[in-house]
Image 1 (cartoon, rainbow, N blue to C red):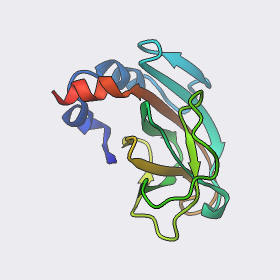
Image 2: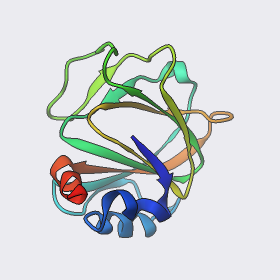
Image 3: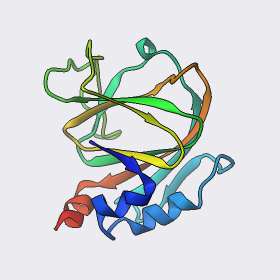
Image 4: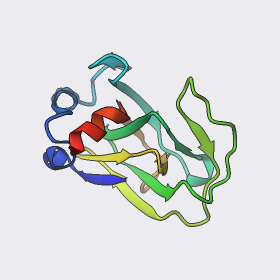
Length: 157
């Protein structure tokens, strides 16, 4: 799991994800919902909005083929992180959605407040849960980049 300010993006991903960073910098709270292809199925972005809600109304999730890089365009939400080990699967892994839903741990290993100008990246070993109200439920707009693992592994080389 990585969480930092957008200005430090390249420290983690090198120049391999510069096109995603450029896409992010063009977004704002009025950007339309949708799925946007950046590099086909290897790198794409989903822009959407929702209302945050209490923690007990959400579940953890994890992915195997993609990492999630999440950024909020307006509003703020709490994101929880926990190692995948020890969490209970609520449903089988779905290859079509590249997702497995997991139960909430009693105490997560990490919390971050995601607000504009920050990002969080979650890898296959990272269970994560968003949509958690920060101070009170509020509408937010966000983008989630889906990055195929080989792109990130190449960025580390």
